[in-house]
Length: 258
Image (cartoon, rainbow, N blue to C red; front, side, top):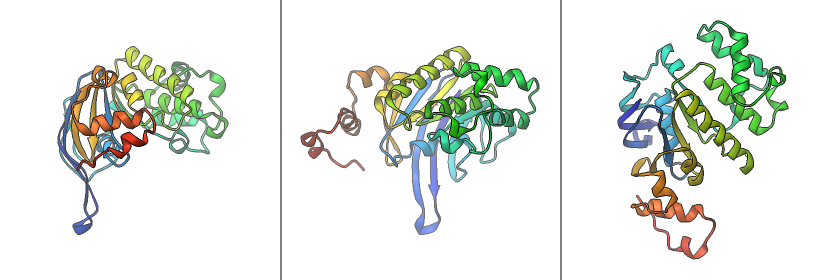
């Protein structure tokens, strides 16, 4: 469903150019959930934004469902692929009701039967019709993220990009959103790419995981390798140690990977 080859993403010009992603290559099968993990600034969200068309200064090859993508994306691509962002409060317009938020993409893509689609989208994410005319500030963090997911799914995409979709939520709410995303993937046959710095979150939802450091893919492993703590690369081993909590002695032994 998704093929990325030799992806390079640059910011700035001349001497101020920063290469955020270097020669990234991976493939994701239809219906698979693929994870990208790494420290903040490692380039994982930049990969998502390049695939989504939000970053245009990239080179390499990106294909989605056999469609070779350029920096300018056709309208059909927006329907095929949608994205859920990290901060649900920041990605929802504060002066728009849930009804307007869900209605807008349907109008842009000229869908008919708007009313039943909105009610179905709310039901699929576990929210009733009583939420339809509320504003984002009247919703909890988890409810806002459910609306963001409903907005992405209302166009019936085949690919959903998830940029740290649970990091702004409480732990108990994180589990609810992850279970919701897992159920929706199975019910709709969706393909996911999920970015997170939380290894436990990625292991819960993804079958394969790529580890990034300073814009480079350093290792790809299965969810089983992650659960059994058997990565190969030293950087991934350090990530696993750090994810288990603060350990002064272990952290003193960390090395810098370039």
